[in-house]
Image 1 (spheres, rainbow, N blue to C red):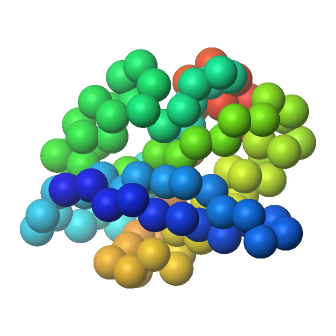
Image 2 (image 1 turned 90 degrees about the horizontal axis):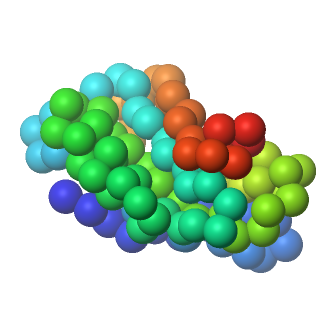
Length: 107
């Protein structure tokens, strides 16, 4: 099951996210997946990875962060991590794993 989300960011901006989770499965560990430079949350295999993680019981958030400046991307990653705690239905998640493709792995 996928849900579109907007997580608050700096100066009234939001970060567009998609939450993927399987019904009836609720791991205390969630996974946040980010794309590389030039991509978005729908790029490459990110949706496939999110579905695979969710099927294994891990709620998965993927998000889009277009600017390639590393400090901006780090702030966006932190906003998603902080905002994940406020997403309804994710209160059982006590720890998050951050995974990234290409430049996102540096964030």
